[in-house]
Length: 526
Image 1 (cartoon, rainbow, N blue to C red):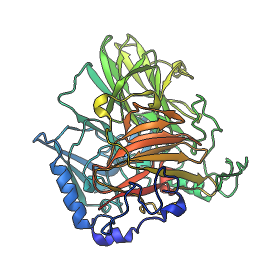
Image 2 (image 1 turned 180 degrees about the horizontal axis):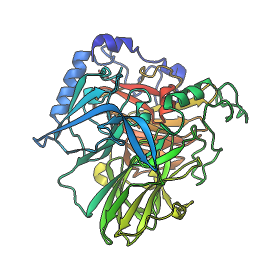
Image 3 (image 1 turned 120 degrees about the vertical axis):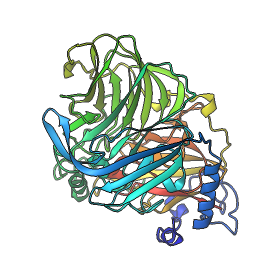
Image 4 (image 1 turned 45 degrees about the vertical axis):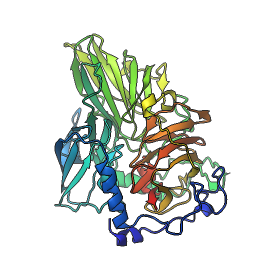
């Protein structure tokens, strides 16, 4: 990244004025968040300094001494959604979701992107704490890849797990540009016979308004009802469905009582692996087999409650990292989150379902089937599963704990309104401006405070963090994650180890919120 482009992105926000540090515990005025008086040589790393730091950290990563070459082509193709429904979508390799990508822990991955979309694009691998210059975020870590151009991202696979790749340009992800990315661990104990990757999504293209039309409708809404009044200095206007360009509000509370609040967008379809629920993907198995499910929520505006009819889940991983085995009938996944779970196949045919939270509409589904059993009716999908696992129910394994002692606490206030449709972190309106600065080697806590009636799945690039408290509950054994749901009017605190130098995006993974301002940058400094 050139110095000139770094300069163009601007400097630090006035953090005290916006509250970034004003609420920090045990920090003295005049000190930075780490509790140290800023050095006179401080400031963000220069282009050369950053390049050297990236190469040093990359050289220290585990290497398998193998190279995995992966190729994807971006193009506009008509896809088959099932049940006679089609859409002209933006695709990886002509399909939605895109071709599954796979490498092993420690491999040198060379991912070649061929852009034939007719517009600029990018690729970000969600959840991988890879080298900064391979993170794929335009205006922060790289330039957009021009139409007709080829771009290669090269990096060591830093840790195993279930991840996914998607465009980080505009609303292209909403039009189909996403797919699974699995990093295998050759030393991992199996304990299962096969695996099934399930990509959950909310879908409008070809069936309703385009994503761009939806965003424009949200941004041009001029009035609302059910005035929420002023909350903590923010105008929390109520939400009206009239003049919303196809959007809706599903009510103050979700149907499961999870406290997820309201939703923004009504979708004509919810899909799994690119198929509508009336014409689902069918996964054939044998009774008694143990199947590893890798479940990815690639939706833009929808949290799902996921389960497999008649099959208890044994959750083993969240966001790629192992947790103590947790049994539940179903699991809540916000946008960007993933779980791995084991099921033991029963004889028959069963729906693997994804029920949209705080929304109406037919749940997404795929079908697990033994033999020639008939595909089950959609009516067999449970309306309210008996148990729903959330990230706050999961406990990390000891080897995945972050052991550093925090030197300070950062505050990230999540704010915004539906009318006008504007969202932000700490009042920041520049999506590429610095929200926070870190020194390599330090450990900090980051406290997300949600001042809105919407839930926000907050995602940090380049790092995995440990959740240490959520919704008023301390989590001494909280899970390692890269995306975490911050429910309305609640707080979630995460612990970060600054071990991966660079300029990193932090944002809400509701893409309409992100594109309307709820994004900023964390930068490393001297």
